[in-house]
Length: 255
Image (cartoon, rainbow, N blue to C red):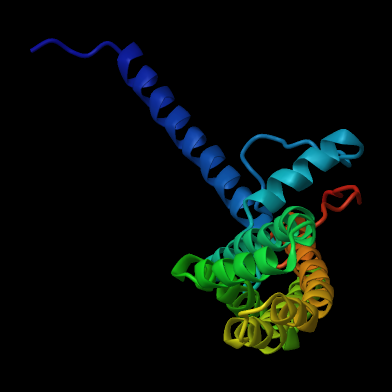
């Protein structure tokens, strides 16, 4: 068996000493990192971020924070929007009917003689009260009131609430004028005895001027109600919008 040259034991000792030194250095570095919390390599102090970079950093931090956005509920619900648009549609149809009657039908009736006037008015009163007209005139009152109540103004009224409330009052006024004033006049004309020219004249004189004046009142209320409801539809809804927190412009300082 060959003898080991003396150089090999000496080399082996050097290798073992080098391994012990490496473990000692690694252990001291780990202990220092665990105490100071710093990484193994030397870190540079962070500079203060200002200007545009600070704004971008703040926006990125607020966009990922779910608590930085507040959503207000109650104003922009689907039922409210549906009621509001139905109210504007019904009020517009009723206002268009009243306006066309005032500027087209009324001037034409004024040119007729007494007998033709009474006969034509009776035919119009028989044709107008249909299902569609009933739905329009009732909807012009019901839908604004529904939108007004759904909006719950007692919890925080805004511009849209007051526009819808005023429109509902105007539509209700037009409805009351139609039901309580003009319908009884139409019934009176339909029940009047008209066999002679003098009776036709008396039947016409009893209702014509009053009916036309009250129709002007009804038309004005219906048109104003439509304008207010359209304005409510075009008014931005602040209650249903999300309001993100404003980014801070203060520089970010390193600890």
